[in-house]
Image (cartoon, rainbow, N blue to C red; front, side):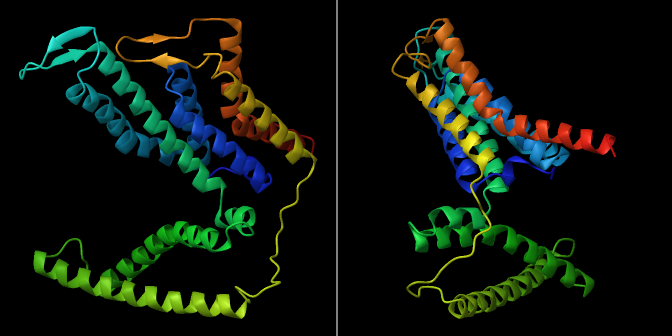
Length: 297
């Protein structure tokens, strides 16, 4: 994972940014907005996760994108522009192909944005924002999000330990694999029970649930956070203002039709692109500053 300067900003700045970009990625189906969201989310995911994200994209995300774009015209036959007919007599329409491709790009963009969200919005940031508003729910969500990678790491440790003892659950015969797999499952259940008891004791010793209990926080809202939040809020509101003016209007049925080109529409898409690129712009700026300081040493 590359050092991300955007993650060092205040949690409210990070959360506000992801609320806007994820919401816009799910709502806006204009082709220009889809392309902007997809490219920016993919580039940011690539920056955060490195070359392994590119391999993951080629192995999973790209096939899912192709599958999602093909599944819509196979089952949705709306649209006036008929290109061909399936053997069962249903028409293949140009509009259904465009809509399938658009929704596929939308789903892929949302996945990429959520992968970035999971990297930036750690459990302590989430609890800091919602701990006083919904303390129980924020704790449950934080523990749930933390459980998956923790369980995966523990499962890998147990599997490796069993392999060293000659109990490989992946290369032996079918019945031995079941036997060793049940052994690993039993160990994991025991670990889960012990972990839950330790978590409960730790929460009790730290005074969880007591009235007047305070919470330690290292987050402070400084000048750069004010500036970043102002830019994000202005960009988000400017883009939202473009909805009633039709700047982001686009339909796929019964015919493909969208808002025409105008300077105002172009400005909305430009602001949308800048909003999506804010983390990359911050990181590139900080990387250049760091290299400049290193060259002056």
